[in-house]
Image 1 (spheres, rainbow, N blue to C red):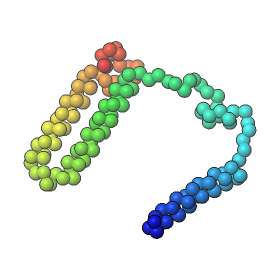
Image 2: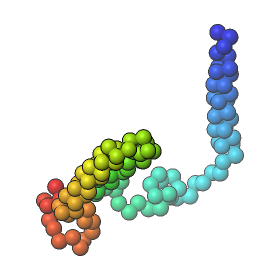
Image 3: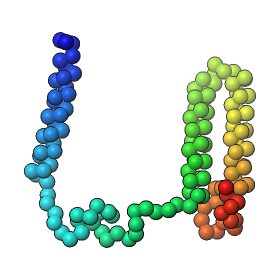
Image 4: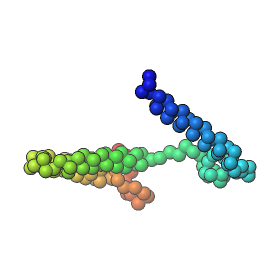
Length: 128
């Protein structure tokens, strides 16, 4: 029990500091009661639309493709760190991996999944 007193003291100090900061903010903070400042949307400006916007499927396709390719870069970085230990076998495996990524990118490009904007000359059914 004697070894845990620093943790308890630290917890008490953190709670006391948080309470002190909240109290100081309440006492010293500014009070605004203008017409639009109590609205939580768009910083007091009049809302221009609903908060529930519908995005097209193309947005999600691009987002998922970005996440997939971004994660693959992490794997390539791990390979680059250990490249000297992996020798030629690791290099060949990394090139197969990059080739798979290039094939996936070409597939997305050919299916027009990366086209974004009104100039795209394809229908929504082609992107899925």
